[in-house]
Amino acid sequence: MPSNKNQTHIKLYHIYWGTSGIAGDYLNQIYSVLSSSNLNIKQTLFVSSNYPYNESAHKYFFPLTDTILKSNKRPLRTYIRAIELIIAMFLITITIIKNNPTVINYSHVSLSRKVVFYFLVFWKKILKKSLIITAHDILPLINNKGEDTLRRKLFLLSDYLVVHNKHDIEVMKNYLGVRELKIVVHKFPLLGKIHKSESDISYDLLFIGSIRENKGIRVLLEAFQELRKDGIDISLAICGKLENPDMLSLLSNKNDIHLNLNFLADDMFMHYINSSRIIVLPYLFATNSGILSIAITQGKQIIASDIDLFKNSEFLDKNDLFKSGDSNSLKSVIKNKLANIDYNYSNQILLKYKIDFKASVISAYSKMLK
Image (cartoon, rainbow, N blue to C red):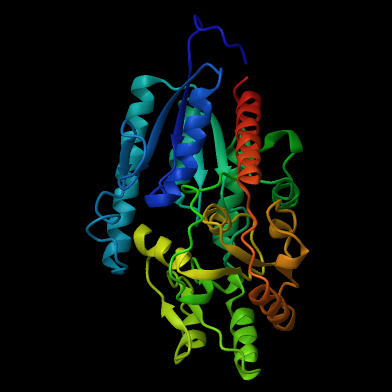
């Protein structure tokens, strides 16, 4: 990509509605890296109303449901949120028509939305914009044929797909049959400020994040109960929004476990992270994990299943991993970890990752914007 300052800037629009609180640091870091590079880019951000970083960002998404109606008050909140999404996408469309950006980068997270797909089709087919889709979630996490069909259509609409590790390239190729040249990878940023001072520990083990079947919570509960039967005095907290109602019966009447099955604001989220000894990621399947990134920056020990996402992480080794779906394997790793707590993420390791992240982002966008 030429860096001649006399050339017209490439106008790049980033659209990511999942940017409330610390989650917004993902886009903040992408923006910062590209702003400090010699790429000839003028960036504009379209984000959640609770985006806490760039003051010049257009905070179009969810002014009500990310603030006044933040608590999970369904179905009212669901309907209002749908209307807010349509209004935000309409306002972005007006801005696109008015300012004529070159490239649009839409971040896909959680479930696909038909209304989003229709807007993306309009931007690409009618307004003739180049379209990047950053895939935070690749495969549907629910058995839903409609979601699977829509997600494929949405991804295939893009000119480039961004994923966050090399394994995801193979997952995406197998899922979509997309040629490799269309898929670009850059590292996932370390979210939040690096903080290693240990606060008072309230929980030995913490699961935090959306409560879904694929997160392996059943395996964690089985391992925890076996440890308690062995006479090991250990505490467990499970915290996060309950997205799968079937999980409620599994977690009910667990008097020996701290449960908070609600949406967690940033301050509460970080409180749980920093008041826990070990973060457990027992996922049965995942292609990305913001929790891993945050736990690393907070200097926390991590236990994770041996799925490819974690097995290929440069921050985890074989002593941090257990056989996915195997509660006995998890039990063994927990016992070893409790006996050998070691906060081993040196500043040099974190600095190297940040340097590599920056280089990978510049390389990815150089390819997509050339």
